[in-house]
Image 1: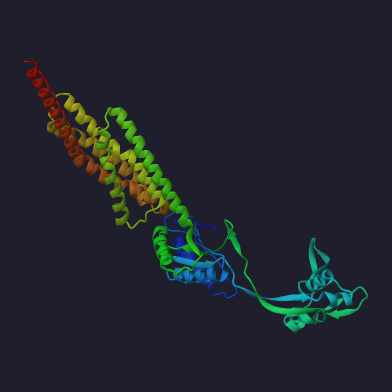
Image 2 (image 1 turned 180 degrees about the vertical axis):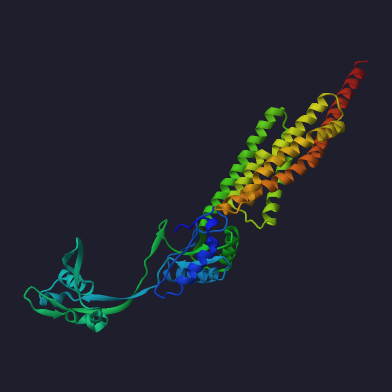
Length: 421
């Protein structure tokens, strides 16, 4: 079901789905239902989340599934909790006596067809009316097959035209039929599923994992989280891999540009603080960590180093022109302040509409804007204050190493001259 744009309605998708749940609960004939919103890639749910329970013993896995389902129902933000395995159902089992069937001129096929036709019915003909066709199904009335005695009294005609009661040639037993058994990777599985509601998948994952850890699992039973939470975890792993690749590529490019292995470390010093800014911005705005905000953090790696490159490159230029270390840093800080601030400000202002949007799809994309803005604010401060400090520390350390090397060489030359004399 597609809703009208958010500008044309007064209720959110969560409020509408909650009202639908309330309405459906009033109909006892509705046994099971699931209401889910569109997937927003790991923010506030919508896609079904599952807990997979593996085990050969059906009774054990049923008990574990019931316990976990009760715990999940008590969790905030978990709706429409269902268990994939149906409960055992009462059925009638007809055990035919081959000797009695043979003596009455019957066989298994005749008996099975007769019982099926009288209980389920058979299509006798088709009715054509106003261009439409309807099946005419002939069977016993429901009231005539509702008890065990009714089934035993079903009459079956043999080839000689004689009618024999089903109870005369078969024994009818009532028993509980086992549920349908699902398999995954050649193992029996039962799944407890639910729909997240107004709560992030990350928070639900922590709470569900805690419930699993606290459960007393029997031997041979294994439980793992699946569904949207598993997809989100895999997405976070992909984002972490992208971050590592981005950091390596940025370092290699800067190392070749500056012809130094030390300068890229100084420039990349602001990246961890950018991630701190992302975490703080998400916390202050009450936004959950999601795949989209993770993508924004990956974007920051390329954006953040730009300001540090501008500052460090200008410091190197001032030192090449003969300025002392601290003088070069002071000159660079004054002259590069405006470009750094303006560059960050334009990016932040460009992300504000995305971060503050309230239209359709804003729940999906606003975390990216919030992440980029928070990271840029922190990284800009770090670039202007801490990057020059780190540069000075590395430069002083490098100068001291050069002086020690010079002194060592002079001592070596003096000792060599003394030996010559």
